[in-house]
Length: 112
Image 1: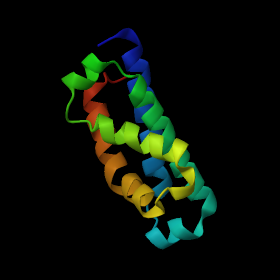
Image 2: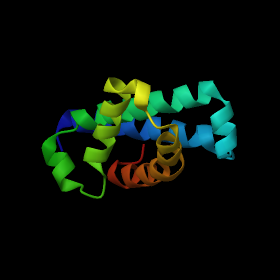
Image 3: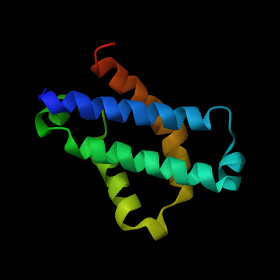
């Protein structure tokens, strides 16, 4: 693992943890009715994707359990096609994918 990788992986873990905390105990209806929550989650997903994009190819290749291309692709969608971001997909990412990412990154990074 290259030295900067742990910084980016840690940032991914921090942002994914924040995302899961923001939706904990909420329903999809809560999400749909809260514009600030929708914007915050889209931004967190974007930041996770940006950090993932900066993780070295070697580290990404060594950890195929993390869906790197999907994560970076979602970031690109939010950044470059922001008017067509599917809110249902962001909800699914926040409630299904981020908890799995937190788990995977938690196994990958040394405990503090």
